Amino acid sequence: FRVSERNHFGLILMTHLAKLSPGSFLSLKEAAEDMSMPLGYLEEIAGLLKTAELVQGRQGPKGGYRLAKPAQEITAKEIVEALEGPVAFVACMDGGCPVSGKCHSKKLWGFLQKNVVQTLNETRLSEISV
Image (cartoon, rainbow, N blue to C red):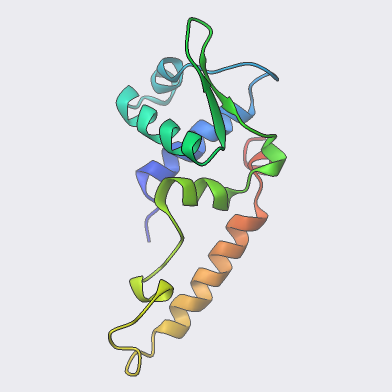
């Protein structure tokens, strides 16, 4: 299994934001340079996080992004779902399965998915950004 680059960089960005002084904003240009990633890609990630109301943005010379709520109130699951949508190890986990009567692997995928989702839901950004 591989975590997407979007999720990986999104989580890195969120940990950077969690370490800011209260009321401070981080410019995406600074973050992109610090993280060695394209600014446009980071803007896309920040836009998804803003849509999910996990970050706030402000334009201008002292603008940038900051967390929309305290890090201890943001779960890893919220971040992952903001960037990629619901966690589904296989497509049939969230709907109809074309081979449901003949599929014996669904139990394994369901077990793994349940445990990953539970772990993501129990893990707070404040725990990751220490």
